[in-house]
Image (cartoon, rainbow, N blue to C red):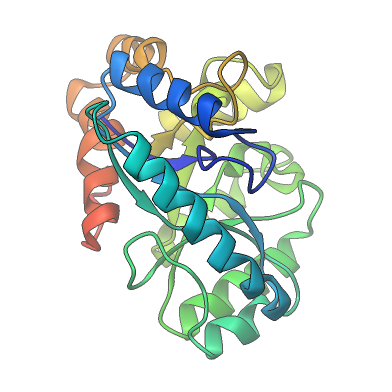
Amino acid sequence: MIDIHCHIIPGVDDGAANLSESLMMAKMAVDSGVRHIIATPHLPGTPESLALLPRIAQQFTLLKQSAADIGLSLSCAAEILCLPETPDMAAARRLPTLDGKRYVLCEFYFDESPDEMNRILDGLHRFGYIPVIAHPERYDAVQQGFSLIGHWFHKGYVLQLNKGSVLGSFGRRTEQTANRILADGAAHVIASDAHHTAYRTTHMEQLNHWVQANCHPSYAQILLERNPRRLLEGRPVVPV
């Protein structure tokens, strides 16, 4: 498996607090069948936030060197909190991406309006980025109706569900929304969005069993292996 959304870099956001916790997260991932993680620390989508990138790069290098013997490949990107000025950053080609080219992992405030989400996403797309929408099942606007999911899917945006949403860790409404997206064949990938070792972890075995039991085998492979690899390599994702 490949995990495209994980807060494993030590001491840069609300994820791993230190290197020791990062290494525990790495070992937990490997033990559950994960072979590659894209580290995606939180980054506000503002020009000022770019000053954080050298520190992120420094800590990522420390993690990668320290985890060399664990059997886990690592690459670095960011989870961009989309804000009004984020399209301006896209216009200037200054957004960190999953593949170093075009896929950008995006998140919103949970109560963001549909119009503002669409304005920002369309702005990113207009300037050559392909949005990977993190945990759409957790947004109020999606939980209140599924038209946004269909709209984003047909625009070619990538929909990434959270492991915890699928397994019920974020409440019944979020679980039902995630399951509806899966049942409609609209999800492209599931990721851990891991932050720690006790809660919201990198361990993916339970998710893998759930997907194998509840989805068509080919869909399971697309969600956990094929599309994550395609995002990592900058290739088009496979729709269901």
